[in-house]
Each structure stands twice: as structure tokens, then as C-alpha cells.
Image 1: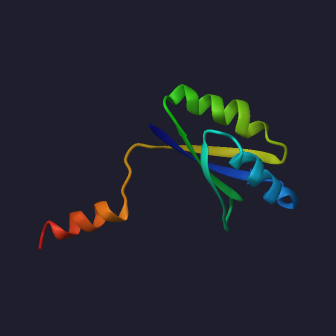
Image 2 (image 1 turned 90 degrees about the vertical axis):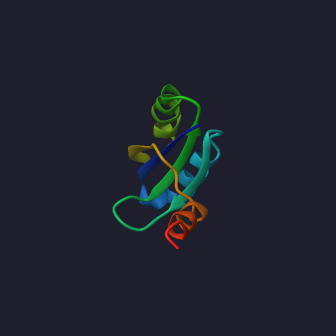
Length: 91
């Protein structure tokens, strides 16, 4: 499973609608409204890199109100359980 973290710049007046439309895409697991230089962060979970391209370029970028995206591919996942286990190794 490949996880892509997509930073989304959106029309400020349409952030709630844009966020919901992105969340409705089947390959999107979560969408967060955030502070800072971007408006939304979407987590895309797919089987292949080609699927990332399809979801982002062909679907997410075409949601009305999306003004731009920046996509990051995750290559390793850490959970709080993983972090706690790593710290307990030395004790």
C-alpha cells in the first residue's frame, strides 16, 4: 500500500466544499483543514505509484476550487506504538 500526502491550496471561500469533495474520492482516507501556507492535507492510499498519479492528476486536481497541489510519497510509517517500542529497547 502506498500512502501519498497531498498538500492542497484551495479557494478560501470554498474550503469546506473542496475538503468534502476530496474526502468523497474513494482512494482518499482522510482530509484535514490546516493552518499555514496550505489549506488542506489529503491522505491518498493506493496500490501503485501510477494510481497516485491517476488520483491526484485526474481526480483531486480537478475538484472545483482546488488551486494547486504538492504531493509527497510516504516510504515509511511510524505509529506511536512503534516509537514507544523503539524507546523501550534501551531500557
